[in-house]
Image 1 (cartoon, one colour):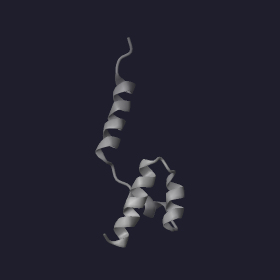
Image 2 (cartoon, rainbow, N blue to C red; image 1 turned 90 degrees about the vertical axis):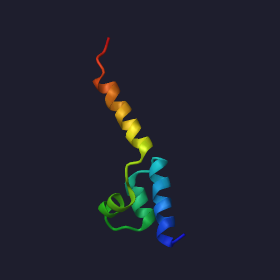
Image 3 (cartoon, helix red, strand yellow; image 1 turned 45 degrees about the horizontal axis):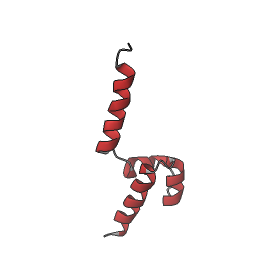
Image 4 (spheres, rainbow, N blue to C red; image 1 turned 180 degrees about the vertical axis):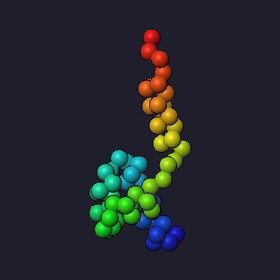
Length: 63
């Protein structure tokens, strides 16, 4: 495992735990939030399903 792989794993686990991006940025030592967000965040299947569940609940007709 490369050093970059451990940084990516760290960032992914922090984001999955709900840690705010600004905190993750500071832990990784980035000077700009855009670097953290562009390099270390990506949509995973669980996040995609959760987002679609929210949309389903919002758009479903109420009875």
